[in-house]
Image: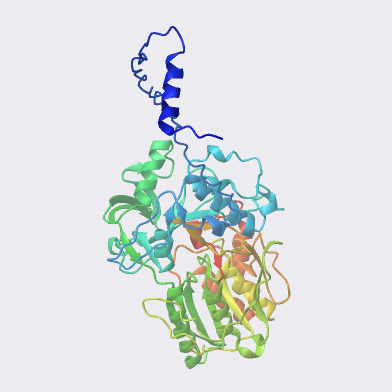
Length: 522
């Protein structure tokens, strides 16, 4: 095959191209440049704004125990570094304090099953008002309220009372309990107090307070003024009292102050034809009483007394351990070894408590002049003891009677029926208030504890306001000494009751509820 030269091939190709079409050469038309549309930026769409959602607080479970809300307070008490006092209080609400009292009652109250269940809690503005209604409404067999011992104090006030310190004038009163004209008489005056310096004496009858009629005065405003004058709320208050003594009226001006009250007074040894008798006035089972009781019984032991008369007509109670120490000092180890002084029985939720024994060694309570803890107590080893009693003889004082009788010690009572309180407390302090609710019923070694109506006297003898306590001619002490020597009640006491168509009213001490209690240790 013959090859076509490259140049000839190129010419043929060009000729071929030229022969296509009309034969005239038309240059190629270049289209105008196309300008592209600018890119469209899509609109910016803001994402929807989600409103913030507060986190759901965790649901606080309701408290199931008083400990869950202990010291959770509406108004927590701040620490006081200057005095060294610190408090466990935490911020809380009224509901927290209401929960505390409700749960505490439900857990510890002796008659918790009898507490009303229809109380409208929202109607209570304070925990104290709520507490006051959280008790049994039932009556005893004698028709009295079953629970007569349900009360509160501010914790500060309770601490002062526990130390034997009271705000007032240093005068104690006894009153009638029947309706009608008021009859108040001075039962005792504290040495060195405003009342003593003003010359008030046992037996003085109150007539007026700051000019207002005390005997017959009526009306809420007048009663408020009477109470303000008789029960000052701070030191330095000045009030006028008018009293009658043996038909003669006198007026005194008193200034209130904190008064340290001696729980043990007038310790002495009385010589009688039948031997020596120890006598003392014992007014309260508090921590301050421990050492003077030990000292008194050491004095009696050194003197070789063969009997003791304890003037407890105004003793409303206090610490059960003080009563157990006193019982041991009366009876000694031979009659009390291995025996229960008192057993406190709680509700069906309470753990079984260990019995309180006759204590042979001092507790060593904190006091201005304490006895050393563990000190061996002096004892007399008596088979019998005499107590002067009245409606003011309550609680731990009745524990002394019941405990000694449980150990087969003869306890003779001269005076009036005791108040009837076989119950004990463990006080609970919360958010500045100390609550007292009956938690235990007390029994002696023989299992006896049914004295809610009190112990009847061996010899019924009226309180003699015409003479000082400790005077050998004073009615109850004279009767006690006579009964000791003869074994029979004085004819004067019997004759007085037989001749009198309207016997003198029995006067009861004027005092706060906190002085009519039995307190047991935790």
